[in-house]
Length: 183
Image 1 (tube, rainbow, N blue to C red):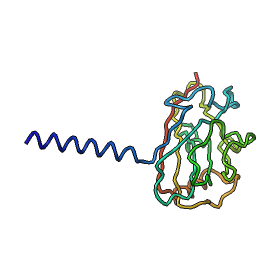
Image 2: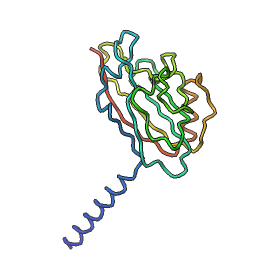
Image 3: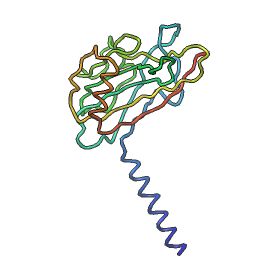
Image 4: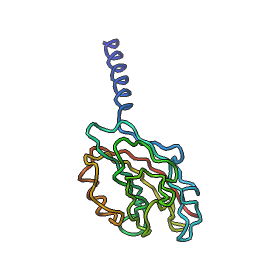
């Protein structure tokens, strides 16, 4: 009986690790569990470099026709959070955004990708800048695998509308959560 249980446990563990290796996954070479001054916004009293992180993803589900990336702070004291970055219409053959691709003046993002307006009122990446003394804020960076090649939106589309279209076209999503606070 013990021998059969041990064999079952080993098979279950092995099959779980194999299936976990094939899940849709988002990783970064430049951001981890804590955001740094490199990613911090430069404005609103913050003095960071405002550099978007490098992001890469793998194992998108079958049928993926494009990707989108968002960065959202649910802890912002606005009643509705804060949208820091919205990129969509990333072609299905792309699986990475290089560091600082959120700077629209550098043209580092894929040519077809659209970086719409953030809650700062600007296009492209706008890094973390929580109020001083407000404690840790979480920053959710999410990649969406989409069932459509284009959302049909433009660079002036607000975050709520982008989110609506993303939610209606998502096959899968994967996230990285990073934290930041200002003292």
